[in-house]
Amino acid sequence: MSKFTSSDSTTGPQGAVLRGPSGSVFYTALVAALLGFGVFFDHTAATTYSGGDMIATQQADLAREPTSPDVRHVAQWAIKSGDPGGRPFVIVDKQRARLFAFDALGRLRASAPVLLGAVRSDSPVVPATPAGRFVTDTGRSALSDAIVWVNGDVALELHALPSPASPGRALQRLASDRIEDKRISDGSLHVAGNFYYQLLAPLWGRASVAYVLPEMQLVQGMFNRPASDRPRFAQSPRTAPPRRPS
Image 1 (cartoon, rainbow, N blue to C red):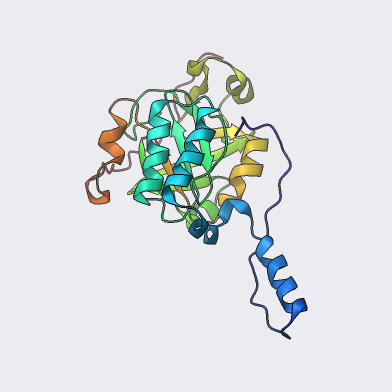
Image 2: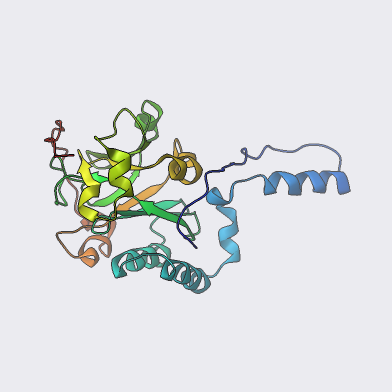
């Protein structure tokens, strides 16, 4: 895999139930309908890959990206544990300010820089980006211009740039090579518009998982635990973050 560069995007329609005559016409139509499903949301193809093959493919793809050992560990753990449950998922590496998008099989689709909360913390205190495992809240997403994931009472939003929720000089900060320049939000996530609309917009209104890696504690202590034993945070009031110098 390579870093995200393209801005073209298509997503297939939901497959319809086909009724009609048997024979070559029927099977040709059936094949065409199946091919219309987007690769990103291909759940049924999971049966064609063994866990070992998928992990090897995933790790080879990650080796060609600017990844940390923690990203590789959580990506591999997700496949081995089956934690995403056949859903696409993203991994957010706060220490490197980068987001990685995976399909429902655990294959890396692309990665891109991401803007994060202005302060370092794994708890949901404004203006920090909380760490943990989040799942899609389709109801909140439908009422927002963002993808919304939740972990207990904590909501995590992902926006495309530019948006009304964008922090000041967001595009310039996103393009900077300095990690600290990307720490400017109220805790929400912000990615380039072309990356969002091609790779992430199809998650809007669909089930997905987001793993936000901790930066104040060990990754293994957060994601290797049973679901019932993972940290769960109570939502803290979200207020406007203090302005940082441009």
